[in-house]
Image 1 (cartoon, rainbow, N blue to C red):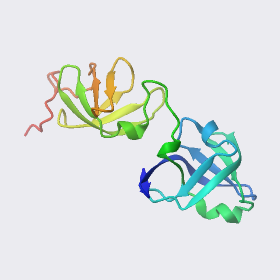
Image 2 (image 1 turned 90 degrees about the vertical axis):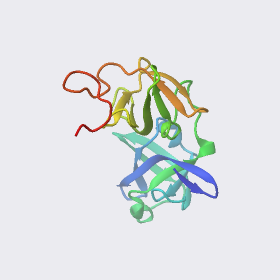
Image 3 (image 1 turned 135 degrees about the vertical axis):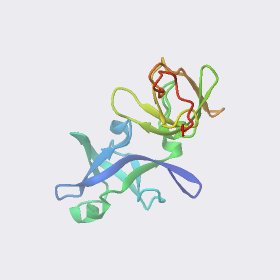
Length: 192
């Protein structure tokens, strides 16, 4: 996320390189909605990671190719126009974020949430969201144990999310916390 003139921007794709000679770029999608983000007529902003957008682009054509999207932009007609774009991000402003189904959240909404167990213990705060495959995994860092707690984003574990209160309640199923040699759960303090 970056701010420009008070506006937050969110990455929807990263330019992985050029494709052919007519100005088409390979984009690695960073969105769950690539067919909407890269459709003809979509407006995207180009920026270096963490900086304010430097250019506004309008998609003239796009198609999926393996794990990438091949995208043409209005006014771009040559590989020379896009060669320097490798590694740059395609972003959208916050007001262009698509609405999500109930009980689903954007990653930026989850980062920083305080996480509590259903038995009242503070687990920590979400520092990252991993996307390994079947479901997301929330990385929770706190004082409950030495290592980060990896919380699978599944209904049996994530019991509630309250964005207004900045908190999540989880059920810590067996195996989510480290255990000491005697099988008891560690207290998060280094044993000297």
